[in-house]
Amino acid sequence: MLSTTNLLRAGLRSGIKGTLRWRLWVDAKPFPIVFQIDTTQEYGAFFELVHRPRNGDRTIHRYKVRLLRTPQPLGGSRWWFECPHSFRKTMKLYLPLGGSRFYSRQAYQLGYASQREDAMGRAQRQAMKVFRRLEGEGNWRDGPPPKPKWMRWRTYDRLADRFDYYNARFDGVWLDSVAGLLAKKS
Image (cartoon, rainbow, N blue to C red):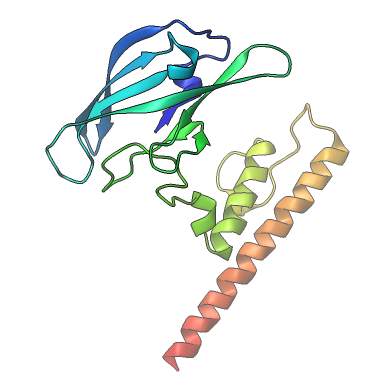
């Protein structure tokens, strides 16, 4: 994944040109990527990539991704990639398994991890999120942790109630799935 916030800082003006070599480790193997950034011309700024695809092909891909700059309300500017496939303004480009070029999430039709979760996974993620906020240690299934010293009682009670709610949802979904399995066996 390439992100404009990592490569071009918010206060960067036009006029940078350079080449960088970046080695990404994918499946315990080096995956070299060479990229060149040229922002010497505001309307001709580009980001050139040289890499192999992730579909097993050994050919080298070399292509340019256009960079767009938008002014910010309080001054400065923000840099964006223009997706070479969908021509959308995007902050990140992805190269998933089987992909040959860096494109936007929409071009590859990639979803978020939370969109692939079932009801039990959602309840568990929410419960663990509240558990971490309560600075819990150990297993989240053991119930809400003791109140942290710095936290107000009202906040703790609200978070503990929310934690109990997600725990109850997790238990309910788990019981429903066990009941469904038992119904199939009989």
